[in-house]
Each structure stands twice: as C-alpha cells, then as structure tokens.
Length: 321
Image (cartoon, rainbow, N blue to C red; front, side):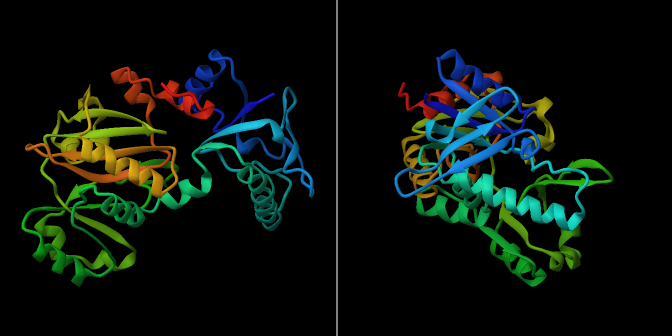
C-alpha cells in the first residue's frame, strides 16, 4: 500500500497537524524519529539488479516496506539514540554507520520529498540564499560577511544609513544548560569603536531596510501563503522574533514579481517547502532577508487561518487545489 513516510521529532506538534491532515484524507502514514533508531526502529533494506530498495522499517507496533513509500516529509528529526553502554569512540562510529545506513537508504528513495535533506542542507547557507535570491530577481540588501574589522569599517563607509549585525548560521546556542537566541541588532557607534571581536569568526552585516511591516511567506510546492507581521514594540521592529507578544498578523498578497522570483528560487534550490522572510518598505518594496528550508509555520496558521498543514499534506500526495 502506498505510504507517506514522516521523519520528524516525536514531539513536534506541527508535524502532528500534517499527519492528521494526511490520515483524515485517507492516506497511510508511517511516522518515525531518527532518535528511535536503532533501539526502537529496525531497518532491513535490500537492493539488487532487478529491484530498487525494498525491505522495511519496523517498530514494535508498525512496519512499512520501503518499496511502498510514495512520499517523505522530512522535518528536523532528533539525533540517533545509541546504547548508553557504548564508549565515546564507539558512539561516534555507530552514529556514522547509522547516518550512512539508515540515512543513505532513505535519501535514496525515488519518491516525492518535502523537502529532500540534501537540498535542505545546501539551502541553509545564507550566502547561497542571498545569491540565489538575487539571481532569481528578488531585491536583497547590501550585505557583508567577514571576520575583518577593516572590512566592516569600509562597509559602514559605503552605506549611507544604519547597519545591522546578525548570525550567519542558526541564531540559537546553549549556554549554562539554557537555550539562548542571538537576535538581529543595530550596530552603534560604540560597537564600531571596538571591533576586536570580529576576527574570532564570520559575522554578517547588512544595510538596515526601513520597514512598514514584514512578511512571512510560507511556500508549499506551487502554493504561496503570505502573512503580514506587524511589530508592536521597538525590539520587534528590529527583530520580530525577540517579542512575539507584540506582533499582530494579517493575510497578505505577494506582488507578481515576488511570486515569480520566489518560484525561481524554489526551483533553483530544489525545495518543495520554505519559509521566506521579507521586509516591506513604506513605499511597498519587498526586500528579501532569508528563506528557511525547515522554517516554523504552525503559529502563522494559528494566527491567520492559512491552510498550511493541509497544503503540506496535499503536496505529499500530489494533490492540486
């Protein structure tokens, strides 16, 4: 029987919505978290000259034949969970074998993907994102990525207005056993007076773009779901993630040139899902900031009623609406 394989963290409730939309529509679903392998999930995959990957994934309650997988929904699963009795070298070795074995077989499946892990991994790089957005016809802000204080000073001299600094990679870190987020911040004169920390790693600097509001544009296959994000505080005006409680949302409409640019972007990076962030200026110009290949969307659906979970389920089943 045709089956949708869902690979996501066990406690990821946005994925719960997608699974419900799939099962409500009559689809067969096999859900797993890579953290369940190898202790709770058994793999037995076979391939030969006559047939592609077959065999199965099995849990204590369910099983699926790899040959029956028609689509895969891949959304940030957890790391492999290996036996605690292993030494650290054994753990590293076993994790590499699990990644190459389980991960290798699953990524070799010839089926619909939302989205393929290889495409998602490549699309995480912000330098590639910006280059792809520019060549796709989207407006991007002047940007510098550097570890050189002199380059920062030169960039500031070239930009007539304020600049901001933001992480090049994930903004989340763990310190003192706590999750912390590094938000976008405006660069001050005091910052420019002492740039000694710049040399320690890569930093991203960008020209500040004046905004009327921002847009989280969720793309699922050929469907676009634009939601206006209106900031209600100074902190949210700089980085809306820093003050969710001040935000208000409205469904919006993307201009035709943005729609065309976004579709070119998705095709060039081989993505079937992405969460785009745009700044919209007071005179209505849309400026691209980033596109997150595994971006959050559930709170946007909750706030606006946009049917994103159903769109993901439809994309996995090849359904057009």
